[in-house]
Amino acid sequence: MRICLVATFPPSGRQLNEYAFYIANELRRHRNVELTILADELTNYDFVTDELGKKIAANELPELAGFNLIRCWKFGSMANPARLLNTIRKLKPDVVWYHLVFSTFATVDKPVTAFAGLVAPALTRSAGFYTHVTLHHIIEHVDFSTAGVRRERLFRFGAKMATKTLLRANSVSVLLPSYYRTLSTKYRARNVLLGTHGTFAPVLSPPDFSKRNNPDQRILAFGHWGTYKRLETLMEAFPLVLKKVPRAKLVVAGANHYSKPGYWESIRASLPPGLPVEFRGYIPEEAIPELFQTASIVVLPYDSATGSSGPAHQACEFGVPIVSAGIPDFRAMAENEDLAMRFYKVGDANDLAEQLAAVLGSPKLEYAMAQQNFAAGVEMNITQVVSNYLRWFELNKCKRLLRDTKESLRPRLSLDALHQRSSI
Image (tube, rainbow, N blue to C red; front, side, top):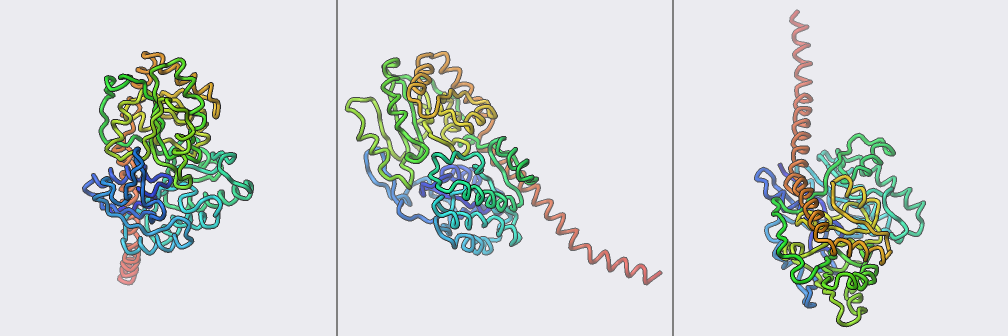
């Protein structure tokens, strides 16, 4: 099966690029899959910064070796639909699989360009290619108070039109039950599937608790920082945690969001000396297991969310408890996937400190949450997630072959019937 995966892809730094990496990494493990990634062009973020401040050329990252990668579209360009369609026509895939949010092709301050890019799946289907969209958020569930949208009513109207356009793909999958209900009821969509975000490893190893709380109790914050993933509330809460948990240490890992250069560096510069906070910057793929395995707890200090959480699923992969902002999407994710998460009021540093201290101060609770999250992770590893998609694609491929066969036989059957009549 020839698959074109259309997505942002490392090291672009744009939303969903890491998720697309893990999906692609699993797809290329399948012998019957011929994978081509149609990714975004690299522009002013061709370098990433590690914890020592050293710049690494993004194209030299070792994890990118071995992928069949074509960077054929550009963020913020009106030409993206045409460029994608031209590339897809040359490759002639069996499946074109888009991974999208509403800002995949442009920011909210360029709504026409963003909408133009979201037309691409409908064009792909119209050109005769089976098209599937994994839609990682829907606009009805986005908190506009933190999204920087000025003309909200007009933007929501445009987003509604974009959603209807995306639903013109052959099939669409979402990762939260509430998203599925919205598309099924409000838009009366009948081509929507409920998928799972999943963990990122094909095989999960049980957590090694000897690596934790030894000697410090590490609080891990991991993500792309500066937009809705922010550190101010966490930095306010951490000194309060230290009063109750003297061995606590905060580890902040991950690069800045491409639109917020220098964000975590400015946070680091604002901290008082001697505070046990470590900023690691960009984390290469091979260093991620050790990062999570040594964490006592993972914190999601977000102001808002745009769908399911990657770091939460990585916490499940390594069996780590989670404390999260009480965002509706995250509460729904925890309930639907049976995750062990404690929630604090968004923006409330005192509540965040209480939740962190409650887990770190109770070895029994920390262990129980870790085991529950690991059990959840085992049930949704990346191999199962991708296999479910491939079974769906194979099923639809068989349906299309059957339909095409019937269409090719129809004229012949009509001629045979006429011949029989003339013979009688």
